[in-house]
Length: 158
Length: 327
Image 1 (tube, each protein chain N blue to C red):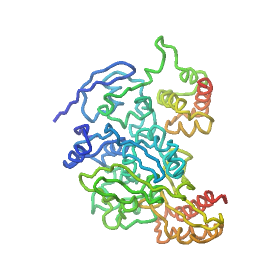
Image 2: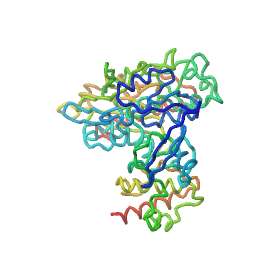
Image 3: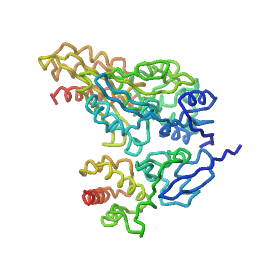
Image 4: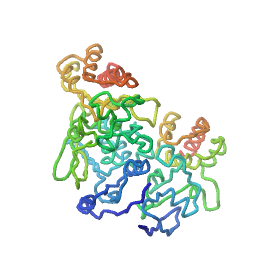
């Protein structure tokens, strides 16, 4: 039996219409149905943070969120953080400046998490950044540079 | 993940009716249900989304105590100034759990109902034997790698550990689960394993958690949650303790003390023997260390987790001395 839901999702300020099975996660809806592949699938089990997006401004894991659950919410992905003319978000610029990645696979999730971390006021010290960014794993081990980038972006935001 | 049908509950009554269907599950934050559905441990036919119900996420703090709605998010409760003042241990138990993203998603009701992290339980394909999943099938953990398994409240049917932090703090302060038609203490909400490890709570078909209530206490205001684990962050407890303390007017003698343990037991574990041993006595490091060992009476180890019997009393001791101003 095929059960299909018709959903309208508000993503990065644009409305998208799609038909999906109820089990489809926000992550799979973004990547497989809407061609928004900036959000990455790492573990697909809520453990790595690669799929981090914002729902109503809060950072969440799109792999453990059903697309159907977020109809009516405002979703922001990595594709939605740069400015209208493509100018980088300060956190994106800080990641480039500090070379805060190696392979880059965890980077969209790191940036989405960092943007929220700074907005929450949880980037006051290196220890606090490490604690509040602990849900984003980097298998290349670029953590020192990630902390430096978040710290700089947080200082610039003050 | 097998497909299922999805519905948004229009009201609590609607949700109660909908989950009476076979294979129906409440969906709130989704961090446990969708994870277990992906593991193949839970195979929902229907998920009933209650995360949009208005008012069920309220957090109320007054002189009577704290009331937390079932779908309040972990992060909202952890960061609530009223909760931080009335029960530091509750706020800390939440902010030391999971990651920032998961805390923004996971709800208080769902947090109570999270399932064990036993690797054998979570892997049905590789380990068909699990009394918690399939009653009577056996226990793959006994004789396996048991480093993260429980030493208290276990049986020869199951040695899985309750993984949560919040419920440990709630048990310490006699919190009550509001099920609408009835109120059950968090301590009684969770069942001891015995012969039926598949039955983890007293929740009946059609019952939905509405929230938890914790009555204000002096011990609650002077409390802490200490969590010791393999990594500094984003890890389950190897052993944890929720402790609250109230002194007599002399500032030395223990009037009231609450001690509960996590990471070492089959359910959130109230250590009443430790409390009884310390009430009426002056708080001193040696007495506390002695009393903390009483929590391990009846502990059973399957070799890899033997360290917990040594670690847990030390965690209790450090937590008590910290709130008592002696550490």
